[in-house]
Length: 390
Image (cartoon, rainbow, N blue to C red; front, side, top):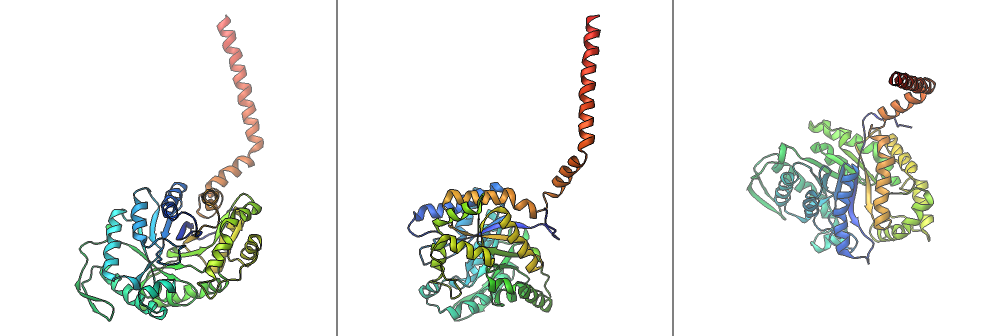
């Protein structure tokens, strides 16, 4: 059945990336670019690359480099920084690199910003976790002013700009900017305050899922207060998902990395869930709580519809790009999703189903018309033979 939606949904993948530690790291990085090519061919709308500097699982240190490589091998898919950790960089350099990428990609780049996730990253930069969010907000304000063409002078204890102005404007004069939101109101506040998109990365976590309507209310409240216009089409919700032909197959394929992933998270996040003893048990926890989907395309479609209903509507669903399964099974998961799930939500099935159902509804008339045409053709042949014989 075709879901009832106010607007078509878009689909993409948010790639930290997170690779099972112990596999070839060079292949892991190359495969993130190859995934962009695969998704582009399947018709996915976007892919986002993250930034991390420790842990051994998230090996991409520069999303800009990934975008530059992927842009040369893809045609239409949009490419996002998911995200640049603003406290680790000078804001002028971020703005200049992003603007360059808008030209290199002919406008396909999207700028996603965040404070940084891993405390071990912050430590290497000499920063406490409590410093990240304030510095991110300070940096974001500067970057947005630079992108708007302003000349900026700014002095703080960690950065200085003196009459700074970008020599290039974004390609086409526009650039989509989004900020990260999880459970706290910080991300939605910034999205509304500056009129930006929102990346809700905890959309399927029960705590984050509960906050979805609240968060969009914060976005609207801040936007109204600061005179910005916001639209749900720039709201992106992310969740874990792996699909296969059967639920049994999906669980078997996820023995590769599902438990490993959640065990890894338990060393990072205070809200990480206890990891059961088996992959099947963990998959059941994800499926029954709505935290994720390890199952079939129908289960994936049901999850997305729940998110639509819970949020009140959003623009893009993002897979969490993690090595739950091996490379071949991961590629097949995205292929199955593109074949069987995307058309239920992007509006492309409407006219197809209407035409199909019309043909079925006219089955008696169709059969009669075809039979009459065959009879007429046979009679015509007889007349032609008779005419030729005379």
